[in-house]
Length: 245
Image 1: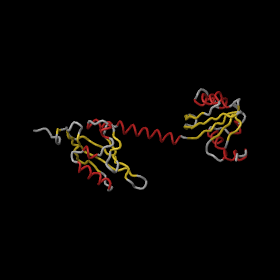
Image 2 (image 1 turned 90 degrees about the horizontal axis):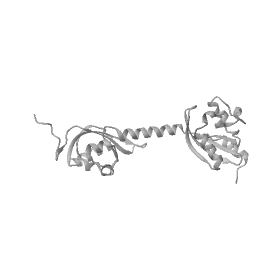
Image 3 (image 1 turned 180 degrees about the horizontal axis):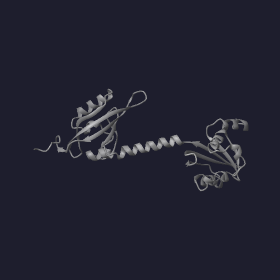
Image 4 (image 1 turned 60 degrees about the vertical axis):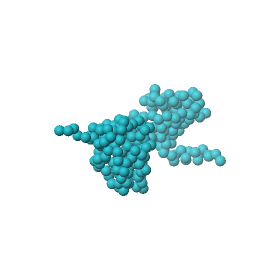
């Protein structure tokens, strides 16, 4: 059953998303409470903007994605959606604009926190992938789920030769690898553990490993966080040896 105008108005007043409607001459003909709050953050009120020309009141938007996409929505009679940064409030907004017979309905959702979280995620991924210290993750089953380029370079493997394989495959002493996993699963943090890793060319590297476990909200083992430090030159078929004196 369709909603009445009063019911639709009540719905729009009760949402957190700002909604503004402009007519074909770009005059503001409707705004909800969330939009009024957005206007007040700019030192204005919805009442003061009612009936005013949108582009006159918001000249900072001329030439931006809002300008281009709003006009496209009108010209092509298609809804548009995009993310944009609004400098006066230093906020990121998810914008939807839907053409109507007599105007354009625009919704503005504040996605600043989501945008910042996504940017932080990208920065952390860049840190992991491009760190100069060799790093890898392994699941509770010991299978490697992620590795950075520094670790691949250290041991000489291609990514597909490393990710998806059990850590024990790359240890000179596989039982040591399994023991380390058991200790991590038991809640221990591994610090400066001396282990022997097998390179793709068959040589063995002496390294020090620091590792801990990232756990989920219920304490479940998600993956290890393993840092590897090379402490010796490779020696084919055995441990790296210090030069004779």
